Length: 78
Image (cartoon, rainbow, N blue to C red):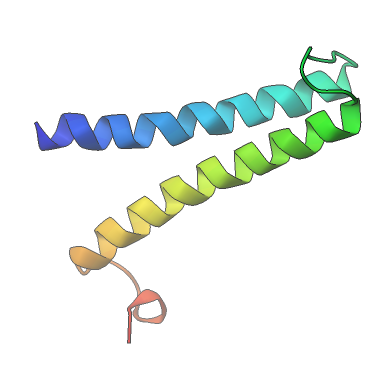
């Protein structure tokens, strides 16, 4: 059960990061989505979604590896 919960926790930020990539890609091809008024704002929203999703996944993995003592000395908490 814990692994399923961990998978769900990792899946949601992954979907958010994928949505961010899609919004940035659509800006490059001049595809504007309905609730967003212009392309630059669409790109910035996509960038925020991408960075937030990848940041959450990276933090989750770093925290897990710190618990298992599998990180280099510079990443250890003092």
